[in-house]
Image (tube, rainbow, N blue to C red; front, side, top):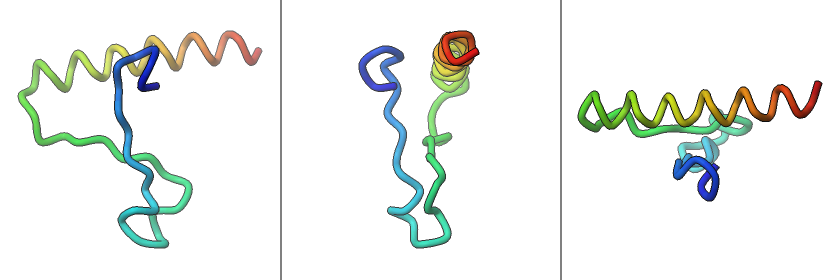
Length: 53
């Protein structure tokens, strides 16, 4: 994610054991920044879904 999409996700476990298995994103940013990040996330997701099919 970091190299291809320029996205940095936090491991959910850093927020306690109930976060295990989850990834966290920071929503405390301007809406255009968030929307751009979500578009990059979607693009990577689609790429990997097609590759795994």
